[in-house]
Image (tube, rainbow, N blue to C red; front, side, top):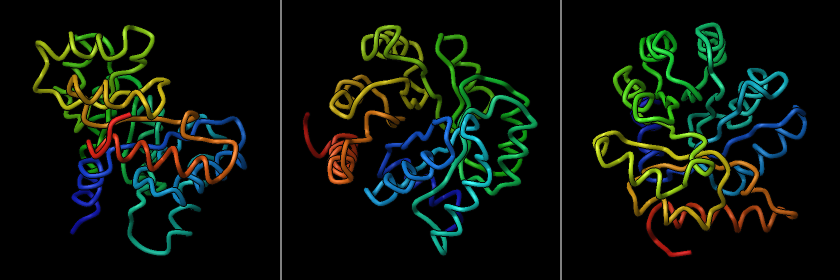
Length: 213
């Protein structure tokens, strides 16, 4: 199995992306390792983290072999960042915007691509550019599940990941309207490792349709 096909499998069977976005590299490392320890298969290190590419390499080295977990990079807004992420060995790429040149570089490398869009025009553009998933972001600010339900009326053939600041308990509402993957960061982090693990287990169970909130 190639890395790409295995990443696809994780997005299908464990579709919760643990988003790591902090201003401290040490804190980012702690959160990423907590997400990994909790059982997440998809970890997104954003370029807003200082030394993000170095942290990606470090986490992959600690893994000691092929994933999961898969370590990807987010906030890939430019071609330069896309190339930097690929050079670091990113296993998937997440963008907040629909930039065709970024899509061309990432798709050319055969790496799984999650490309951002909010309006119907942006979502359609990201899909046309070759995104494997379109990240509808920041969806809670524009109506949450109701918004997704409306845009999926004409765009129901576009596979969508939702992101932008909601907790695990809200996953079923997004799942009911057609979202197939979920990007969550801070709401997964509890005051103790045990609580973080509980939130992750809940998120994965809800994302798979195994439980209700």
